[in-house]
Image 1 (cartoon, rainbow, N blue to C red):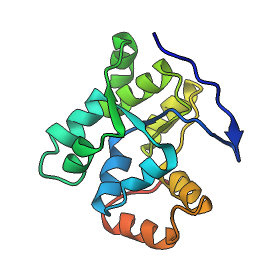
Image 2 (image 1 turned 180 degrees about the vertical axis):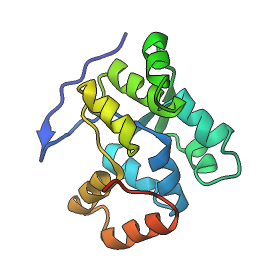
Image 3 (image 1 turned 90 degrees about the vertical axis):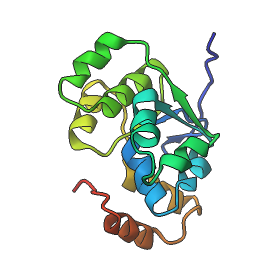
Length: 164
């Protein structure tokens, strides 16, 4: 039985957050050794099994694999609504589709998505969406990150693509 937690809002962000991450932010932050930013911002993060499989299992030996596997603050969950997943899978990757379904199922405050199509689908389903730049900006605002421009440059050099 799941417990519903009341959420207070602080500067537009819930105080007690339920956040679902897609693989791009996990891999991107791991590439620059800053995965800890997610833990500092949220305490814990949920990921669907498809994201775990993409980053840890199929991504073995790549950036993020060991970091995500060892992070006890990242919780992997299976989705329940397979019909919704299969419908979203027609246009999205497995990780993005499961992240959207999981965010909906657990009433997450938001999924972390940077892919344009995935963001549009989530917004169309009335899910608030946050991307990497907004996360890093919030971390800087809270004093958890003092070198935002440098972190953005590192991510770009590591191959992370930002939406314009």
